[in-house]
Amino acid sequence: MSTELQTVVVVGAGSGALVARQLSTVLDPAKHKLILVARRPHFTHLPGCLRASVTPEGAFEEQVLIPLDKLMVNGNGTIITSEVTSISEEGEDGGNVTLATGDTIHWDILVLASGSHWEGPLMIPDSKSDTIEWFKGWQAKFAKAKDVLLVGGGAIAIELAGEIKDLDSSKNVTIVHNGDLLLNKAYPDKFRKDLQQRLRARGVNVILSDSVPEDALTSTQITTVNGETLTPDLVIPCRGPRPNTSLLSAAFGPKSLTDAGHAKVLGTFQLAAHPRVFACGDIVDLAEQRQISKYVGHAAVIAKNVLALFNGQPAQEIYKGAKEMILITIGKEGGAGYMDMLWGISLGGWVTAMLKSRELLVARVGGIIGQ
Image (cartoon, rainbow, N blue to C red):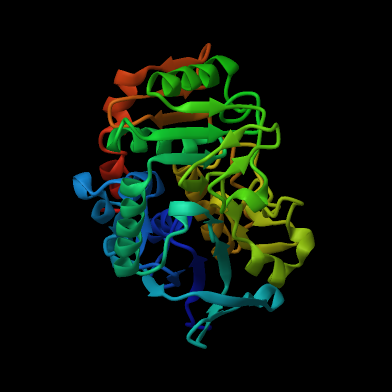
């Protein structure tokens, strides 16, 4: 009888960190080996990174890079800080991942949680020291800027606008969004209109049903598609993330992705034609908004299914989705929230500030990964 340990490799320390932590609670170290491979030696708490990019107040640049040293329960797992450069598959025998170092790691089960590509201040470097300098560089840009244009009208733009107004209320801040309301249709119009009113009350200019040409993003004199002239001295793209799925596509073919580049998965989070490969988090194609609160549920389903496969059983745990809930800050003392429960519950600025705006959920997120 073979004594070789069955190995699960998790790629990525965003939603992947949640998967690795969950797996560390159910895998038997006498039978299984758990390896997390991540480019960064920490979990990056993105909502806090916006504030860290705008102001040194509160030292959020230190708080938002959460160590992974306590991630694995009872030390049941190994973390390797490196980048995966390629993936190979060998049928029922699993396959290998190749690292930037040239090393290869065999996997019996692979979990891909490679996250997203971001723009602007959220296009964060990998090392902690480089990231701290990155934040300081952006803090200097925002301190100097008098007129800031935010291109896009999602949560990133809204929260960034609030942070800039907290830094200096005299700064001119404009949001240009191609939709007729802020956010997207996952949320009711009443909530979206309320956010617009709260922004305007803070002195933020909101331009809807308009857009900025791609070649104008580096200009200081911009004419929007609808002919409006803007003269910002700082332009920040806030158009949302793109899924980081190039590795997945290279390994398993372009048909494993949607036209938007997200991974096609079954309800078990397995790739349809690759039952020993799972994907989760930002990169998967699900009818839900991409938030870390939901990825706890992704992790729980994957952990049960990985254990079932290791025990010679089919993966049968199905992800049932989650209710839409969101808290959007507008500075440290404002914002709004929405919960898709009962008739639809809206939360005002005071409640949002208590729940999120002041501390940005740093302690809560740290607790999820063991800190």
